[in-house]
Length: 427
Image (spheres, rainbow, N blue to C red):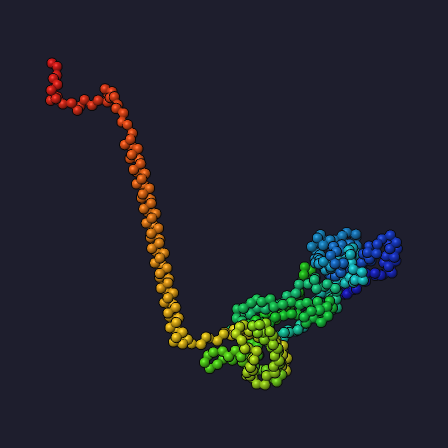
């Protein structure tokens, strides 16, 4: 079931009601009173997509019995996703009867009622080259009709991920998951028309070759839809590299272009951009004539850093066309080595180094002798200071007078007198 309810003139009596209200209400309020719709008794689930003025508050849902639901307060049977300019509301088992939305619904916008939301997606190719650009589109359908609404992209969260299928022998064994892009409806990149309800991919397949399992999902707080499957990333059919010389060195002034057997040279076109050390850019358009071909790089003339990036558009032998980005080739050209020195120059260098060593040794000796002399002076000064202090202390002690002390009887030691000293004892 799909219904488009215009912001003005839903039914004859609603238009009459709006006309009578305009005399005492603002046009905006009148517009809000027009946002009425009726739900039939046979509807089990319905999704409401309402567009509001940017930055306005979410709408208020008024049920047939006059009770209200808000974005922050509603029963569990209702899921609500609100952005800066729209509301997406899903209601399970809605009550039959007249409903109303109150809010700053944009003049001339449409309220869309959907009983089912489905995802339509272009079939993914079974194989893609690494770095290949693939244009895929997807749509969300409401009751088999594409949903077209300004800023509808803000309501959705698109994602595309891949994970290795762990096929033995693949380069990508055990790799992932990788988020490789999303879908957009802004009229940029590969998307043709902005806000037409057709979402276009910007997927990046620049990952190791091998078999992957993919999952494409679109969701928000109201619904979730996803697609799964397998896709194989093949090695790039075109390779660019610098020429290797028989001596093992690299020839930076010549490029080798190598094609895989499943690519026809006459239907391959390369667009290369070469950036030199002075930030100059040179464009090269090449159509190879052989599976392996070499071409000169005359702009590689000075030493420094170089970068080569580009794109390749071609056709395989089975007629499948492709367009891919080539991996960046960066290299550094070293300056030429200086010419060998003559015998006189080498002798002059040796003499200069000997003189520098002699001057350095002489400087070390001078610093060593000076340090020893300073140390001896410091030690001698310290000894002299200590000796003079001791002399002064000795002289002060010698100059002090000695006062005699009178002994008390208790301080006399009588044991020092012997009986043989001529002193008689009394009988």
